[in-house]
Image (cartoon, rainbow, N blue to C red):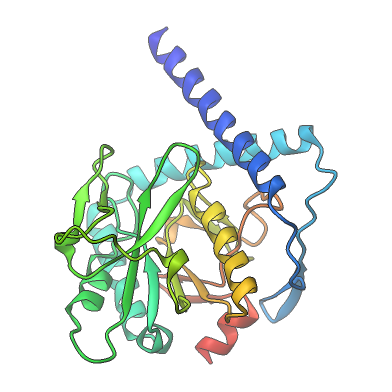
Length: 283
């Protein structure tokens, strides 16, 4: 009985957070940029952002399909062989570190991987960026959860020592550095980020990303897109890191108009190129 109550409460909380996120995103100004063009398997599809007339029943059906899919993927990740996981972590990070788009990036946002969440390891990527002390050293911004309302900040760090464990035992940057100075927030930075390295529970070959239900990355990416349009900067490349069990067929992940697709996916088998932005970067 107690277990059933906890499960029900968890589902209600997840649903409430999704509804709150949708309500907030509806209040954001409609994008003024033209529809994003995506190239999938040689074809081009138009992804539009229609924020009006969404049927509540349709949204609820999408939420339910997402919850079911999250449960399925979590089980697959939990049952993943540790040796295979380690091999795939190495393969994915090797691909990223050797890629021309990573080497050419001057400023990036990347997640700090969590073993508890069974995320693709980013420790070598982070170490590579932070160990470079040359003139062209990349700026690295990493996430810090601000509250339970899907708000995160991306703050700049210069060493792994800048990270401390949060209440959820996830490594995050403190708001101030060891000298008491406020860390640079990417939303206040004078230069744009050219690369995002993103986590997720699952990804399909059309670029749809299934998160964990909190909406933190979707909300942040939409805010950053607004900043880009305001400052007339180039769009950053959105790259997701994925284990083989997290890759799904095109259209397998249900989406709302508020979900932000990725430009490319890095898996152990290589790249899945999706958007025209990715095509230009990889070719």
